[in-house]
Structures are given as C-alpha cells and as structure tokens.
Image 1 (cartoon, rainbow, N blue to C red):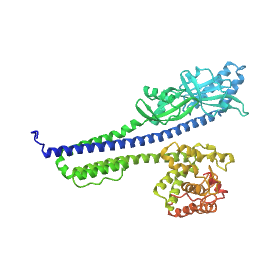
Image 2: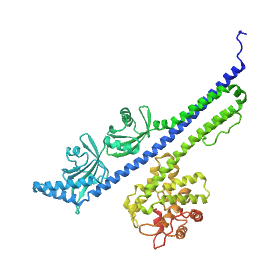
Image 3: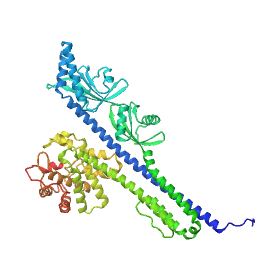
Image 4: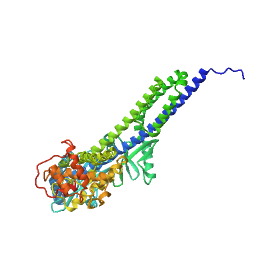
Length: 570
C-alpha cells in the first residue's frame, strides 16, 4: 500500500455517475444538434430554391407584360401620325410645324409613362433620330447617339443598350402604318442599375446581382461577396445552384437574361439556418444546464437506481436520431422525476422540430396552390379548375383504395397538372371557340413544358409523371409520348378522367356546361379509346359520395358538339 487512503465510495460513485451522465448528455446533444442543423439546412435550401423559382417566373411574366404594353403603345394613332408627318416634313416643313409635332410626341410619351413602370420611353424615327423621351433617365439616354434597329424587326426578345455608364434592358417595337410601312420605333427601357436591384431585393427579400460580360453591373451583395460571385461565375463551366461567398453558402438562380446580361437572385442558407438554430441552441443550453445540475445533485442515488433507465434512454435517443424519427415520443420510465423530465423535454424538442418541418411542408403546399391559382386566374372560365380536378382525382383514388402516400401525390399532382399552360399565349388559351390545328399544337406542348418546370424542384419530382402524361390515351393517340394502356401511370390516368369530366361539366365562353349524367355517358362512350374504363367506373362510384360543392356545377344543357375534343385540351 502507498499509504494514501482510498476515496470514499460516495466520491467514486459521484465521479463515475456524474462523469458518465455528463458525457452521455453531451454526446446526445451534439448528435441531435448536428442532425437537426443538417435537416434545417436541407429544408431551408429547398425552400429558398422554390421561392427563387417563383421569383424567376414572376420576372419572366413581368417582361412578357412589358412587351405587350409596348406593342399596345405602338398602336397609338397620334404617335404614328406625328412620326409619319415629321418624317415627311423634316426636309420641307417649317420650324414651327416641326416643333409642334415634337411637342405632340412629348405630350403623348408623358401620358404613356404614367401607365408603365420603366425608366425611360423613347420615340425614334426610321433613321434612328430621337424625337422625344420621358422618364427618370431620359437625360442619360438623350445624350447618347441614336440606336440602330437592324435586327429589331426579327428579334422577339429584349435588347441591351448602353447609355453612358448605364445599361438598359430595352423592349423595342416598330410603329407600323396600315400599309405595313415602318415609320419609327418605340423603346421602353429599364436601367439595370442600383435602383433596379434594390427594388428586386425589396420584393423578393433576396440578394440580387446583375452581371454583364462577366462583370458585376449592380448588386446588393457585399463587396467581397460580389467579387467571390464574379470569380465563381468565371471559374465554373457548369455551376450548381449553390456557391460559397466569403465563407457563407448561398443558393442562387438566374431569374432574367438579356443578351450578354444576366440577373441573379441569391439567398444565404447560413443566415436562414442561424435564425432557426438560435432558438434551438437556447433550448439546448437550458437542457444541458438543467441536466448537469440534476446529475450533480443526484449522482449517488442515480448511480444505483438509474443505471438501467439511463442506458435505455440513451439507446432510444440513438435509435430516434439514427432513424430521424421526430414523431414517436420517448416513453418515460417512472424511475425518477429528473429522468422523466429530461425525456419529456427531449420529446418537446422533437415536437418543435417536427412542427417546423410541418410548417415547411405547408409552405410547399401553399406555393403549389399559388402556382395553380395563378394559372386559373388567366382565364375566368377555368377559375377553380385545378382545385376541382384535384378534388375529383382524390375521390377516385379513395374509391380505388390507393395508399395515403399515393393520394397525397395525386392531390398535388392534379393541382399542378396544367402548370405548363403558363407558357401558352393568352390568345390561344382564352380563345372563345374551336382551336385551329396550329393552335392545338401549341396547347399540346403544355405537358412537356410543365414537366420541365417541375424538374428544377426536387420535392416535386413524384408529381412529374402526372403533369407530363395526363393527356395520354389507352389507344395510344394521346400526347406527348403516345403511350398505350398500362404503359400510362395509374395516377396520370386518374387525372386524365377527372380533367375531362370537369371540362365537360364546366361552362365556357361559347357554351354552357353539361350535366354530370351526360358527362359520365360521354366518358363511358369513349372508354377503352380515350379513357380507361376502370377509372371512369371509379369516378361514377365516387361522385355520389362527394359533397355537392366538390363536384363541378351542373348547368342547363345546350348543343355543344365534340365535347371530348374539348376535354382533351382541358
């Protein structure tokens, strides 16, 4: 013996139990924190990705609307007459006459400026001479030599125009007389400057950058982040949707493109994760402090009575963490108040995380419904069509006893089935009559376009077959792939029948809707060729079970030839 007294059993027990409890709790908290942080990062990245896709669609829609406005302005008879007269009298007319014409042009441009959100409106004659301009940057434009329009007549896209240190995105349309002669040009210009990116930043709550020929033109990024982003664009031939900027991970998307200029929206994943994790870290710290105090105060008693329960709790936590099970609560042992309290706190923490994931999924569903509502809003006669098709499809799926997971895919897929019609021109989509062959060819492109839109969003992948294949037919005469019979996925078959039923029973500009009974007879008549018989039969069984508001409205029947041909383009 070395003469030193052996430590008391109480001390040894205190050290062993307290040390074991401290290590165990630390390991559990680290694993849980890391797991939750990784999950939050993935969820936030996907959420930012979806919101930027929506921003990209909004920016594209804005550009389209601006061109439509420009084409409408170009039909202004006063502008046409003034430009034509000015061109005719430029070499012979008097100064007073020409001055009066220019005054008329300026007055009309000032009126147009109040109806459109652009930085400058410019009117030029056929030789490129500026006859008038209006807008906050008209002085910048006026000091620049006239533009040339050698390619404008054949170019349906926007153009870039350099005025001093400012780059403009320009919509250029010709002023055409009734005989087809072009007498001038109307330019609507939006400056790609600091004000432009600040406006996008306020709308989207995202960072914005305009890049032209590899150089930053305007941005809301910090200086070092802007330099890092420029280097990232130059160094990678195929960029992923994430980039590291000054130590922070950003998700980015190109939301607009004009010739060599690109407009990007960027969102910091780290900032989003930090906001979510700050509350989690506070809760975790309180749990750690409480657990440490309890372990220190009751280590002697816990060493003898809680060895088994602690081991079982540790195993259960490890299993939940490994399986990422956030819904099944850990059972309390009843061996001690402290251990049960720790278990309940952990369960509450998991409930909070599960609720956060549920809110994120609800946000996804809200974005999907927003996309469907945006499409339905383009045509008052199809308002609510996507919702009704979704309701009918779910009812059919329940009659066929589909699993809950398939029902959810069916519900959202049916909501999105016509999302590709975003790319169909209004004059085709809202035409109040029978489509021509050329127009129907345009309509037939919407399933493929919808599939390409959804392919950029990972969590929407299960819904792509519904969107792409809901116009396929059993006889192989459908589109876009001409699939036959059982080659067509079951969920796509269901949406095909629900879509046709709603098209037949809904009113259009050129006819009223047919009754539910007539619609079912029409679908049954075409079973085996246009529609799958078992799906039509399931629809017939599902309709009596639905609430009256769930089915399409039943209207007075009038003569309406070729209902099935209308249904196939619904």
